[in-house]
Amino acid sequence: LIGSVLLMDEPFNKTLPVWRFLIGFSLTTIAFPVGRNVVLGVFGNVLGPVNQGRWMGIIIAVSALPRVIGPFLALKTLEL
Image 1: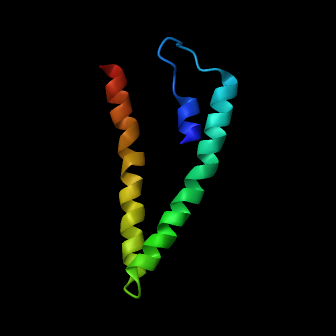
Image 2: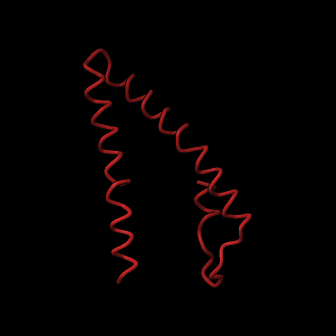
């Protein structure tokens, strides 16, 4: 959350300082894999003794969709 807040532009300032970008990007890059692994671990414990491979595959595939579709939607938004 802190990394994302550092990457946001201020309302009246159109530039993002380099130091804020570097710190925000670093925090986000470090926190994402840690958070994802914790969520997958909890999800595996909640599933119990069922076929976890299928469900883990589904959750990874669903989480990949925004990373595939997101850039196209962002490009369309910028073209408006």
